[in-house]
Length: 595
Ligand code: PEP
Ligand code: MG
Image (cartoon, rainbow, N blue to C red; front, side):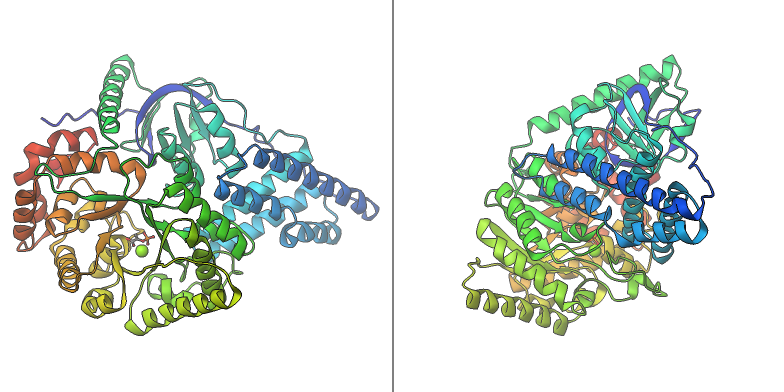
């Protein structure tokens, strides 16, 4: 039976970034909101104000360096890079020189000038794009705020949070995230952030329930309030009465028991009821995830989204910096394959370039490989770094958003060119298979030809579904779970699987569909045996695998391919697998009657 709890009376909805349920007293991280002091100054005071600003920058830089130096010398390369980027921003001409110029031109005090410069840089970034660029704007804001706090004599360091309490904050910087790993709250609630922010990733790795995007959380929640963090559904409940608290405690206990059971079986080979083995690999955004993860039972890293290395910095990472990170990851993976996906930028996902006009249709503008081929400087540097690091493990290179055969051929030629350079320079490198993502319809239709050019395929359903159904993946209203099992998507996947099987090319799936508790049986039935997903999604996927068998999922997929609508497919899944998967769905907040 599906247990449905009553809707909470006062709750704020956010986006779940790390699953789990917790109840605790709020520790509201209000670093003392303050109004920026604004003063007019005399022309002969500008040098004094400049001195204050420089002193604040110096102190802030020293403080950040101290946090960075708390990191272990081994590993944690990505976190160090993030902190390095923040340290480097202290010297950012845009930030500092603009503040001094403004101070002199308008005769205003350092705090006022700095505040205005931060606001204007932020506005520039935000007006250009959403998503990735916004993270850059967030970095500028975090660094600016640190310096501002120094100027007005406020504390920036994260206070120790008592174990068992719920940390409520506007946002957490990479420096906070590093400190957080020492205090371990019961849950985290953030007003800003995204499931792919560094704090969210760290929260998942430490198994701390975390909800981001909770509007006005620091205003609506008071220090010491008892709050319920339901990070399975994305709800922060503020006025739970005793009856509700008891129910939540019970759900939390059941969830912990359920995940505990799953964890115990973590190192067993993932297999279906009938013994069919499935390979589960990990999708990672930051190297730190791999460095702190337990990789027992994980086949490898099926998707390393390298573009995250380029975010939040003024300049792209150097070749040597990249070699350090890739080598760290390969060593941590201990001879498991690691698929380094070449940076996937373009359209509105530009990392560090100065703001440019927003393309009229970013999803269809220069993206992925097409973009990389216009920035051979970046591409060749990255390929060189991956190849140099390849001696430390089993590296693979994968190109994103491949849309044409000539593009893939040019990309492969780049790899050959870099290999020739390395040989000439006497730099060792290992054999590195080259694969392609299948995430645009043209790649699907050319799958038989691509199979002659690529060593492996990995299907990116996040983009593929968007392009097959012509629905923006970033619009939650349009892009619901039902879209994943739309018959048009299933037929597309069947076509890819068939082409790859026919050509004997290994094929995997690394889009979110591979871990979806409803769609996963269909994915198996269509022939996918190699799935890549975030580490936190793996226990649930293993559980689903263990509750279905090959005959069942084959028959399900065969019949689903004949359906006309997603609703028909949804009904079919519930009809065929409802009994086996009801408990799993219910523990994870899925109501089958809504499919
Ligand atoms: C995908 O599109 O499914 C994919 C895995 O790539 P990303 O989500 O990074 O675009
Ligand atoms: Mg994609």
